[in-house]
Image 1 (cartoon, helix red, strand yellow):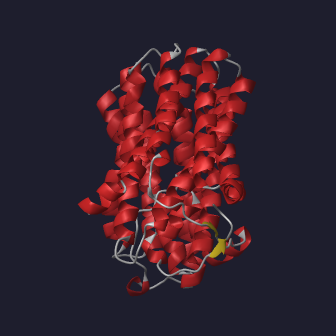
Image 2: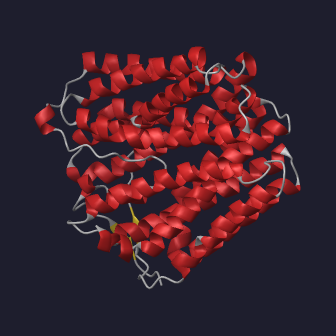
Image 3: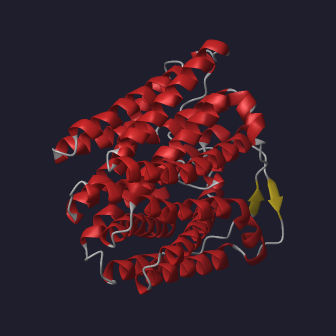
Length: 419
């Protein structure tokens, strides 16, 4: 494991810089818009543009990589993301910022596709699982660490935006100097959304509602914290603990999922997540530490809806269709991440800050009912026939699904001609 980490040190460093800078910026923007007295509904519409750009990027970036190669693509979009970061404080305009969020989302999708392609190209049958786990750990820790950077400077000043740009530009250096050969561009077969709904509706709805919840929380979490009176250090800790909780709960959820029927686990996780969201509303605002526990439990359970949904879907797929199904699940998650911030922002505008967690609970209770109905009307996969559970993060590109150890040996179509 140590030798593998050393050999991939340049790649890991680029991931840390890139993810921490992007996570820092997402929280910073929510705080800054709140400082500018922009209402929650408008904030949701502005920040959801990141998800729109990200989904578009995952769909179209392979064409750009196929033309100019991985390193040039990474350099161009790291520069675009850095320039966008510097432009935010130049003009605080919701229309201008919405445009910048689309650019940032598209750029981040491009950067993740490049990095994950490199990581996937280093995978073998013996190290695939270790590489996948390493990426997940580095990603979560970098994202949590990025939240703490909010304490570095006044969100109303240029300094935090400059730091974000510096981190994104620094991510260029390790990859720019790497001796690793650029991987081939690989086109993954996609499965029709409606085909997947017919074959694994529980998986599709689980991924969709996970996108709604996580997209809404990352977008409006800083806004909620500001509205309930948390200062900047407390807001950064609030967001950081929520991200770390998702990583910490992945192991116990996986342990249970390998021993019991996964649709029932999905149903109970959704129900527990909904109750945790209500607890954050009724118990949290008056006690910061109770709020951290309730929100940590909610976000940890919500984030694990996606890997459970992937596991349920994989159990119902032939081996050669797993990656195509994973691509469609990621698209479902992406659609949810567009819906969530818009719906929750309007709810917060109508109800107040508690609307964020009331809305979260409502979506989770709806998911509970959907899965309960599916359990009653469709067949179960025997526990002995289930694939091994893998804690997959949805905050990535389809390339990471290729690295999933459950997909060992799948066939991809290579696009020749990359330099």
